[in-house]
Length: 340
Image (cartoon, rainbow, N blue to C red; front, side, top):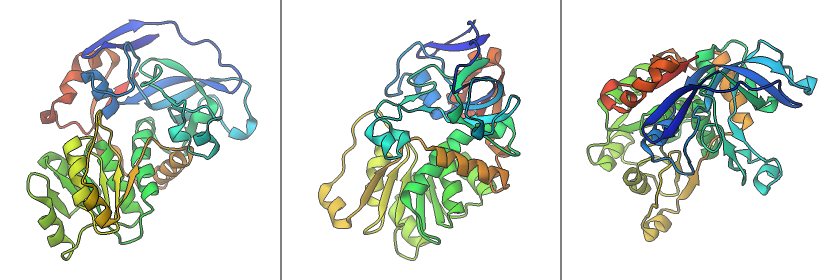
């Protein structure tokens, strides 16, 4: 089967590897049809992804078709031919986090395409419990579900109130997913961004009309938009350490700061100011099965329009040369998609 391997930073290789055998009990053999290209993949290509080793088969945003099923619980309602999104977080089910339902931060977590080989290949075997079937979502949409779940999980962590003033910093794919679900939660969303292209995309496709220009001092801009006040919840989806540290100063007294992005390194903040505001700081990692079910429901109900998000496509052969170009901001990539 065709397989794309990231041999080392900056170097992909398209090769043939042995296809998986028939699935065992509790497993499904799936045909990979779509692979969304994630920030994690871009960081790995650059050599900047934490908890990562080479060589690695990337790919954790997957739209797949079931080819064969092992001996499975019939109540799962899956059958050969079903198209599904894949929940790529392989948790142990035994540790303290898993026992408390926080499977997304399992002590022994292995994420497909990060800690173990992922879906940039024609077939892969996955646990049936990690397959999420949709009623009407297309393969393109299913390959975006995992990305959307990152934002949905962060918003769920924040427990937003309807009408609550919210700031989302960064309008890349993860920021866009956070914006999407903050709006579905009824929040009053302001976006801070430095890229005019990203601002235009969010304005056109997510109906965002409150902007803060990240190239200018943000506090006066926020106060002008919010009647002299600051947002009660701030999401930072940049993965940029300078942005993340400055975000401590952008929330209201008693507010919340949610780090959706991940940076390889240390962050610092002024403790007296943190205490003066009595802030609550959240990390938001991955997502849970409940988030996958919610996101797919929103897609099935037509509450999310994903068609504009996919701006670039490639076959396995094309990806080898095109991938490096997708790192260039001038290419205007929102989401790139690998098609098998």
